[in-house]
Length: 188
Image (cartoon, rainbow, N blue to C red):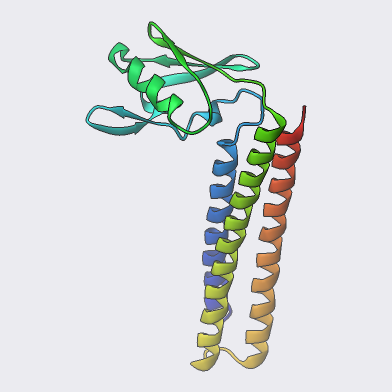
């Protein structure tokens, strides 16, 4: 019975880790005033008959604190890269120069910082919902094991408590990540 619970706990942990990784990936797309290659990683470019990640058509670099550059490998894709960055919803205005695309990062306004903070809170809440969904699945599996007499009531209560502690630890990690991102967004 302990082996079955350990297997369940590993599965729940893996799924909660996935929710936390998704949150971190979402946060990396939120601009906080500092140039970071992660800002452009979610951008997809129309190329080679489909949409491909920007990182598959060029190299992203940070030559200055408020500037990103993309060294496009195929000269014919420069306009597609410029269009993809402009239309990605980050409020950026790139310009092509040969095979190099320059992406200046404008100063963040107070209004834009508030919008970014709200987006960060939405991402964090979505992650918490995902973690709670994983918890619910775990609780249902524990109840099913108890119903099938695989585990007793005492074990069921103990396992339920462990799943709740696991959930609480992930919710705290999400809250900590949100606090860090909020601090980063609001820095002047």
